[in-house]
Image (cartoon, rainbow, N blue to C red; front, side, top):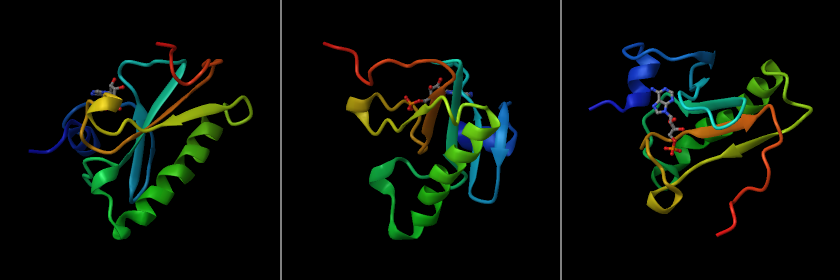
Length: 115
Ligand code: AMP
């Protein structure tokens, strides 16, 4: 079964794309947690960081490079932004297709809420 992100990448489910190349896409999160909230997603289905292999290094590098490009497109390169990967159950990963959140466009506060 394709992941929900593969369905978005393939056009089977709508996605608000802001970037696409041969390895990576970026589209707006459907439930934004900041004024700018974009998901940077490899086209290859990788469950999460624990499934990454040496042959995926180009993909991982591209994801960070695309973060820079998208931040510039969104005019938040100077004001700053947060990059976040939820990995596994304790991190509350909901979609098991590797993705990096790019959050910004406003002051985000500390990374973790006090508990
Ligand atoms: P995570 O908890 O890191 O797995 O985050 C999954 C993210 O995917 C959440 O922020 C969701 O809002 C987002 N999401 C789920 N379905 C869609 C969709 N159809 N289009 C865009 N973003 C989505």
